Amino acid sequence: MQITTILAFITAMGGLEAVKWMVRYISCRKTDARKEEADVSSLEEENRRKKVDWLEDRLTQRDEKIDGLYIELRKEQEEKIDWIHKCHEVELAQKESEVKKCEIRGCVKRIPPSEY
Figure 1 (cartoon, rainbow, N blue to C red):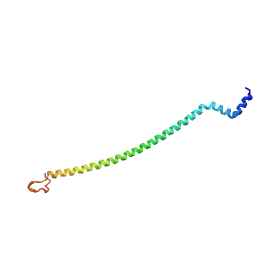
Figure 2 (figure 1 turned 90 degrees about the vertical axis):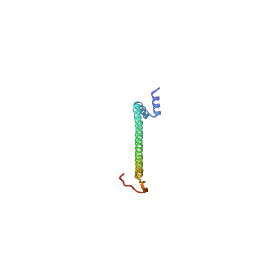
Figure 3 (figure 1 turned 180 degrees about the horizontal axis):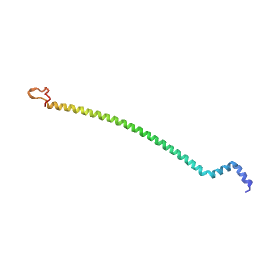
Figure 4 (figure 1 turned 90 degrees about the horizontal axis):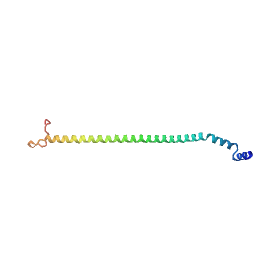
């Protein structure tokens, strides 16, 4: 090939800019690939961080909900224990009155002294 044919071909392909682009592409392709890979990995890391933050927030919300439920459960348990104590006190008073009941001489309704 003649030099004029080669120059005409280069000019038809974009001239000096095409040559600059080819030289830059050949010399910097590894660097450009690393830059693209770094950009992609930084985006992936950002997505992971966002996901972890979202999961931590969700976990915090669930912990708060569980704490609220435990507080409510403890209140209910305490209320039931109070009712049990009240019922036992009434049963104890009933048993005590049965033991102290006077059936001698027909005084069924009399309250006996507490010295028994």
